[in-house]
Image (cartoon, rainbow, N blue to C red; front, side, top):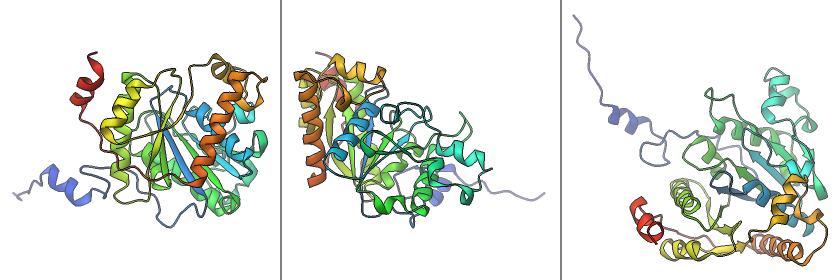
Length: 304
């Protein structure tokens, strides 16, 4: 009877783990597929925190500054660019399925759509639930955009990324981004998710160019809890958007904030987005933030 040798699971992980952190099983994108000279931002945050609203209005703000902007939605529900295009657009996965995944048969207008004020819009989509990895979808999207030369005519690329980052697939945009921006509200759950995102960016920054760019406070009149967390971790807040009903209504109206009727409150938010876009275009220094232990976050914020 032939003897078998059992190899410890930890040894297998050590031999095959990619260089993104201990035990990582993240999707490795083709290192030759790079976005180019555009400034690339990846927008992260807790699910439902307003990343798509923030991304779309930031895209418009960049376009108002005269920049050529591409927004890439990385959520299977494909509604990142909804307020820019006024409807749900077909995804890259939809386009690939239509040609039986023969990518060479695709035209640019099969998956790239022009939105408000000239912002170019792409919805990556996602695989059917439980059947694949979002990282593959992000990789295929960037590859297609590169092959069709759209990225050569783009100044700013914004990845709007699905919910909380615990999955290597949805951390894939970090392999392309220059700066990661975290959208958070002034509450414990949002800040807890932000801490996880800081961990993910720290892991990616060991092998890629991405660095933390800063925090965008959203749907919050106060920022005292965010300020506490920033003070401990070394983060900083780049912009602050209040809990304003016009912002909520804009999405219901399929509109960006730059299309709403004038009012002092709306004008103040528009100006804040324009100021943020100008600051990001000029360049923000990377922040070597140090994430907190879970228990320490509870001690800092959870027992007031």
